Each structure stands twice: as structure tokens, then as C-alpha cells.
Length: 80
Ligand code: SF4
Image (cartoon, rainbow, N blue to C red; front, top):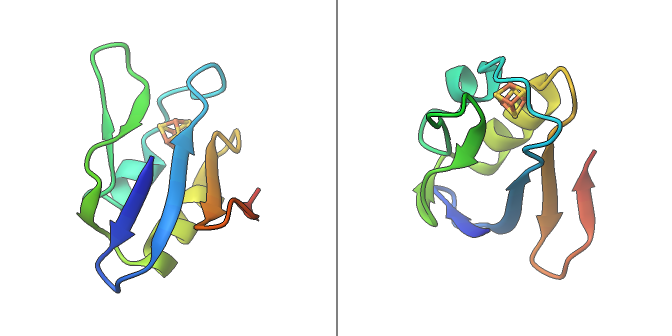
């Protein structure tokens, strides 16, 4: 999903649900970006006013299975 961060950056944030093990560190670090659904998998909760860019990057890096994928507006891979 293309999201607009609190510091006005646009990035693509996706969760690979096949990889996600519901460890929740992404939610702990970036609660305005990630939630955990009824299947105990993370998802992106909103398109707007999500956490700032550095916080989302930190959340992605915290994922033990690298299930969070980040791309810039042009589709260039940021993480992993
Ligand atoms: S940190 Fe990774 S494994 Fe844990 S809930 Fe988030 S996406 Fe899933």
C-alpha cells in the first residue's frame, strides 16, 4: 500500500503474510502503521498519517523474518 508518512514521505509498505509469524515487534515500534489481524498476521492499518519514515524503517528492520517490504514512490526497494 502506498502510504503518506507523518513527515510527508510517500512509500510503499507491504507485509508478506506468508512470512509473518505475528511477532508484533512492528506494531510495538510503529503502532500507527501496523496492526495484527484475527489471523495473527500484521497488516498496514492506514494510507495516511502513518508513523514517520525512520520509525517505519526501524519497524521493518525489527521484523525477525523480514516480512515487511518497503519501496520508494518509484518502486525502488528500500528494505530488505
Ligand atoms: S514484526 Fe514481522 S513477523 Fe512480527 S508481526 Fe510484524 S511483520 Fe509479522
